[in-house]
Every structure is written in structure tokens, then in C-alpha cells.
Amino acid sequence: MSEVDALFQRAAAVAAAYRHGLGDRPVRAEASLDELRAAFARPLPDGPLPADRVLDELVAAADPGLVQTAGGRFFGFVIGGSYPLAVAADMVAAGWDQCAYNGVLTPAGQAAEEAAGTWLKDLLGLPPTASVGFVAGGQEANTVGLAAGRHHVLAEAGWDVEADGLAGAPPVRVVAGAERHATIDRALRLLGLGTNALEPVAVDHDGALRADALADVLAARPPGPVIVCLQVGNVNTGACDPLRDAIEAAHDHGAWVHVDGAFGLWAAASPRTRHLVDGLEGADSWGCDGHKWLNLPYDSGFAFCSRPAVHATAVRYSAPYLTGSGTDALAMSDFTLQSSRRARGFSTWALLRHLGRTGVADVVDHLCAMARRAADGLAAGGARIANQVALNMVLADFGDDGTNAAIAAAVQDEGTAWLATTDWQGRRLLRLSLSSWSTTEADIDAAVASILRHAAAAPRTPLVPGTRSEP
Ligand SMILES: *Cc1c(COP(=O)(O)O)cnc(C)c1O
Image (cartoon, rainbow, N blue to C red; front, top):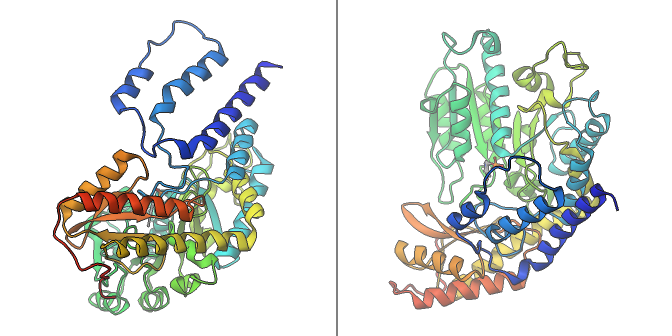
């Protein structure tokens, strides 16, 4: 066996053994960060070490510090679990070492992205003519969408922001729901629009923007450049802004509409949840993640734009040495902020071909069902469920903030599952995000049992069992 064969087979074997062992280890890391620092902080060798030895050292050092996000009982953040086929496709992509800059550098990479992009637009109900950038994630997708919006609304006002910057430009209003994701604020900082430009719009009980309040905010100032940021999939509740009415109100004021749908956009892929994102095709740009609900490996997101030329004008660049760039034909990198990147189209194409239309709808439906199962189990055990569980998010309350935090810490420490708390409407609540394809009913039941066991042990203000908050 050649050295390359031995190394690659060993790497695949390590990854497979890890996957098989997921259920047998605590979901949290077993070693502390300081222990891991000590394991990695070896002296830099003066010369080369054998590759096989170093691979084994890496595995030995890292393994105790792995968090089992690839398994079915990690419910923190919004964390997909990566399907085995998608991981395999990414392993092959790493072996091929293609740089997804343009079709000269990797014709295969560009063709895969184009085909996968067409499928994604079809699954999500986006205009077939929209452009797609295969970006690193929701943050990059939101930044690209808002850059396109910034270009468009200023060009309409006769200002060339790419050439002249923002100093002296007509002011750009940015209007967004009060419960927008924090990456919108970071994108506004990076784009020079500034967070003080934000005009927050009142939201409903679950954090969805109110379309009537949006119309009022828009009408409060004379017409001019304005970007409206909408959201589908609030990180705490899963709530979706009322897209059809909000987009209509925004377009009545000549606004550019960006939709942050990092995980919630996947509601469009199932007939059962599609109504939650009704009207989404009317927006101007959309951000979505592959590494959350679709369960692609990190890092993978999609930046869609209804006007490909606007999308490219806002983010593309070229240089004489970059063969094949700067032509009229748009290339992959004209739609992203990275020049050199992994060919993300390979794993996306492979996973969509593997799941098919019904397979994608099934994973959407499955995680909604798992969220309802968790909510029902917790409510039956005495928790108040603080949100409408229409998608994959559950907020649970055992009476007081300290109790909720103590329960989350105890469940994490026990290792049965991993969940955390969040701030919601002035309270600290338990928060579960159901995002991994591999979560089973047994995983939910084990997590619920652990939560209820620790809740019973914690001193708290009793609630009426099974109470749910008003819609
Ligand atoms: C996760 C998330 C983001 C950020 O996505 P990354 O892939 O982590 O960059 C943005 N918006 C929403 C609603 C999210 O859930």
C-alpha cells in the first residue's frame, strides 16, 4: 500500500469509527479546553515527522475534545448533523483539491454548482433565473444579499457606491424586525451602513415582524434608498415573518428586500410547512444555510439574488492574471466573498441527488415532528412551552431563570444531550434546536427524560402542569 493509500484509508476509518461510536459517549466534550490545549501545545519540531505518526497524534489529541454535534442529541445553537454521503463527497472534494474560483480552474466544480444551484432554487421555490453563490454560511449570504441591496438602492438614486463609497452618498435606511439575527447587524457594520441606520420593526409574540408595523415604519419618512431585511426562522422560536404582506409593503416603498432564511427557508421544501414562507419568491435576495437543516458538512451556505447582474456587480472583482475572470460570462466567485474556496457544489449536488425532492421534504417534516415531540414531552412533565412550535425550535420554562439554567447545565454535564438557555422576552429559557437528520424519537425521549429528571431535582416555583402560553 502506498503512503497516500494508507493515510486516506486511515482518515476514512477514523471518521467512520467516530460516527459508529457517537451513541456511546457523552454529547459534551470529555476533556476540558485546558487539557486539550496541553495536548496540542507540543514544541514545533525542528524537522519533518512521519505523516502516519502525525495523523495518529492529531486523532489522539483531538478525540477527547470532540463535541458530538454529528449525533442525534445535540440541541444547542442550530447545528445540522451532516449526512454520511455528503461527508464522503466532501472527502473526495478534499482529495481532488479543486479551487472553486472559476470554470477555468475547475470546470467540474463550476458545473456541479450550477446544477446544484438549479435544484436548490427549484426545491425552495425561488425564481429559476436567480443567481446562486455557494458561500461559507448564513453570515456571508446575508452580507452578500445586503451588498447587492446597497448597490441597487444607491444606483437607483444615481450613486455609484462601488466607486465612490458611502461618504457623501444619499442615506440608506435599513428596516428590519426587532428579532432579526445578529449577523444582519454585523453585515451592516462591514458594509459601512452602520447599525444606527437600523429602524427596528415591532414583532409579535413569537418574534415575527408585524407587516402593519413595517408599513408604518416605512411611511414615516419620505421615499429614498431603503433596504428591508426579513427573516424566516427566528433562532429562538422558529417564527417566520409574514413574507407576502411584508414584501408587498416594502416594494410599495421601492425597497430592496433581503430574506435571512438560514434554516427557515427550508420550510419551503416541504408541502407541510411551505405556507409558513408563503410569498418568499417575491423578495430580491435570500440567504440560506446548507450546514443547518439540509445537513451538509461545514461550511456551506447559499446567497441567492433575483438580479444576477446586481449580485455580481456588488461583490465581483478580477485581475489580469486570473485567467477566465473579468469576462461577460459570470463565474462562481462573482457571487461570493471568497476567491479561493472548497468546491462546495460537489457535496451539495451529491446530497440533493441522494435525498431527492421527497427526501428533503422528509428531513424538514421529521425535525418539525421531533420538535413537537420534545415540546409535548416537556409540557407533560410540567414545563411551559413559550413558543408556537411550528418549525424546529422549542423554548421551555420550568418557572424561573435560575432553575432553567441549572437544568441545562445538569443535562449537559450528565452528557445525555446538549441544550442551553437563551434570553427570550426578559426571561432565561431552555432552548432546543432540532436540526440533525439523525435525531430519533428515542433521542428525544432520552433528552426529555433527562431534562425532567433534573427539573424534578431542582428547587423551583411550581407551574400548573402542561400549561402552554397563549398563541
Ligand atoms: C445561523 C444563522 C445565521 C448565521 O449563519 P452561519 O451559517 O452561522 O453564518 C444567520 N441567520 C439565522 C437566522 C441563523 O439561524
